[in-house]
Amino acid sequence: NNMSVSGAKSFAAHVGNLSCLENLDLSRNKLSDDACIVITEAFHKMRSIQRLHLDDNNMSVSGAKSFAAYVGHLVYLEDLDLSSNKLSDDGVILITEAFHKMKSVRHLDLSDNDISDRGGTVLMTEISFLTNLHEIDLSDNKLTDAVAQLVVDTVKGIGRLWYVDLSYN
View 1: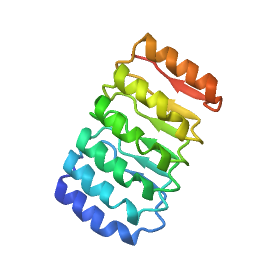
View 2 (view 1 turned 30 degrees about the vertical axis):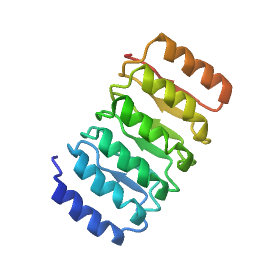
View 3 (view 1 turned 135 degrees about the vertical axis):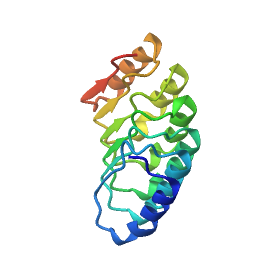
View 4 (view 1 turned 120 degrees about the vertical axis):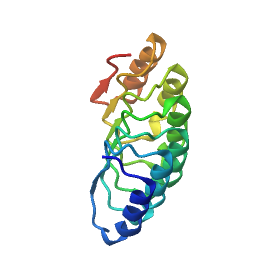
């Protein structure tokens, strides 16, 4: 698919009629940052979302900034997939700033986002805010042995992660 900004605006305008919506999958829509911003600004209308998949779009830093600003409205969010976007270190760092608002998240997928040691280090420092996190996928990024060791140390320290994927780094 190729959802444009006008398609995202139409979706956002009508999502208020879906107040019981629990699962939203907008993956593989080639959403631009502008379209991602429109969608995230509508999060206040989607309070019951538990599963949100925005994977395989074109979200980069400005989309991540908007996501971080509005994700606090999704108080029941448990499964978040932001894989295969263009977040890079700066986008991931922006998202980690919202971790304190994402207490229900159990599964987080940030694979294939061009995250290097800078973003990975901040991510591991802030991950303790995700108090219910059990699974994290950081595969297919640019993390080195230093961050891999930090991940191992973090997992030991918090003890609640069941699944960690660091493959293809």
